[in-house]
Image 1 (tube, rainbow, N blue to C red):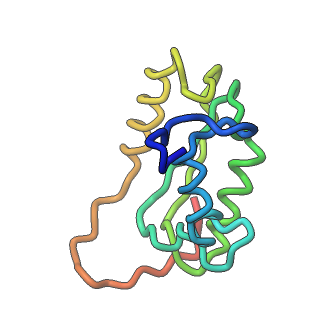
Image 2: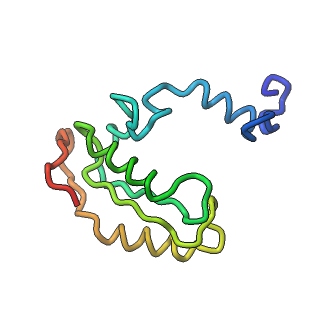
Length: 132
């Protein structure tokens, strides 16, 4: 499909485009399991700032248990985000349709809790033991 100039055509089965399927096939293991649920060197270890993750309560992607698994997987890594917060967006579907204000409020409130940026370059980050 891609070679034929149709990268956005849907494949049979999981309803993804040919281009998306090719991206998934070519993704390295540390980015397929980005949060380290099964991988020992996940992509999330490259993030050193606070992280916010959320799903909608009416969505088809994840639920509170999935967010807790994501959070605990990130927290057991030796390096990575200094903090992980998770939120369920009430009455939101996969695309958060009609809940954009709620999403914006969650992000704005979370951003208001962020510490000032560390301006020293080259400083290695080690996750503190205490977690919020």
